[in-house]
Image (tube, rainbow, N blue to C red):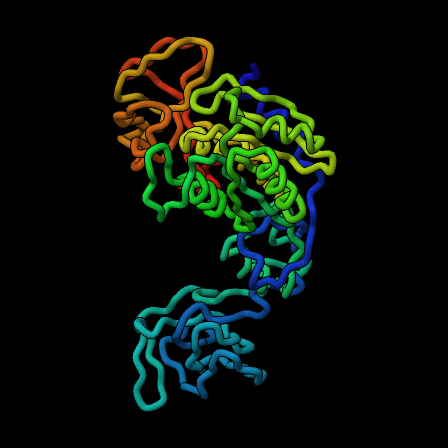
Length: 403
């Protein structure tokens, strides 16, 4: 049985080549940049006013006013000592002006400007190229694109960007006993919590190209669903039917389809019967145990790191934090335990609160949690006050949950 570290290392080894594509600038948010971006102009492209005020030359206290200079002004305007021009924020500084006086520091009477305070030379002027010079790199390959990056790319003159594509994910839940959420389950049936849970977890992490399906515990039904998903998916994530019960057909169906199974168990709780393999065509496939908490933990710790690596992210491993436990916990040795905790800041310390739970299948205990704390495989207990490593859920901390 593999350790969690060994399992993740194996998973990431099957990420395959990253695919690049060109997308319009306005639709590139959420992708990872696949090229360096250089500015084609100086930023600012001209000397401009940092605020509304008056452009003046010299340190005199009185100046004769000339015509106002507005933002977007294209006339070549000069200014001499003893003259002042009203100027708008962003307007070009007239030739000869060496400072801008704030409106609050002066008064005007009969076309004459009177300065109550003379600002130093260069005050309130944004000089050409003081931020960026033409040809300078403004965005680096591997940058996850957020709103500010798109604004910078626009300032650098880009209308389209080369990015790493995001994989499409085929999701299959299994179980004859599983019915849609809107059905009233009869005895022996349960509602399908896994499908919306998985879709939401992937979408909140930025992976929105998801194809969901469900199949009964029947080899032909499972095979047909998997074959259909293979046609449109880069990664397959199956939930349920992976253990050793008489109705757990997923492993045998995968093998019949030519899947190389790389591991079938991981020394962890929840999620011990975790399967990972690859199709002859190269697509990775996960087989997750059916209880929702096992699904949530497995996606967080294995599926998302793989998807991020395939999408060009530099950070594909969960960022490790440390926090002080506020309660006790006991376990048997042999498996690493992921504890669903609420991590909160108190002074200089992270503290970890463990909600009451009725076991590894208790999804209600995760309502207010935002992190997974790890108790080592050989540990027997955790005492209040012990320091534990933990990972934030990606839906909680976004990019800060990865390093």
